[in-house]
Image (cartoon, rainbow, N blue to C red; front, side, top):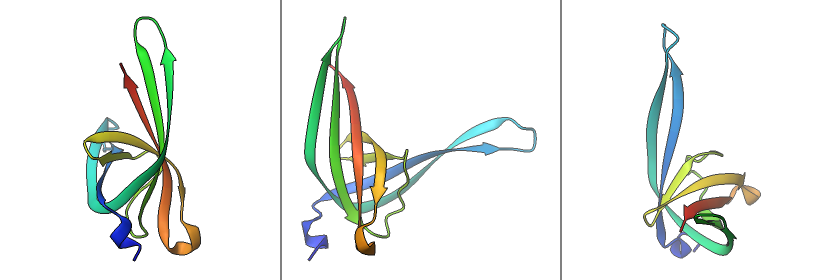
Length: 105
């Protein structure tokens, strides 16, 4: 029943640093997914700054328990890139986490 409520698609993008033998740090981007998910409870904040307005949107995301997701990952949902924060696994049933979207208008 829970999976029937997950009507969006989630792709996780994780950037990791790899230290090679010559100690030059290389960035490696790994993609995980897609996983079914659902977003809800949006809270938006608008900050008027000169010369641009900054928009911050906070959402709650729900996904399946075996999704490979960590704090700081980029969550790609419906064409928007969100930053993953505060991961919580209630009773080992599913994953809930906070998403943050920063935009300039």
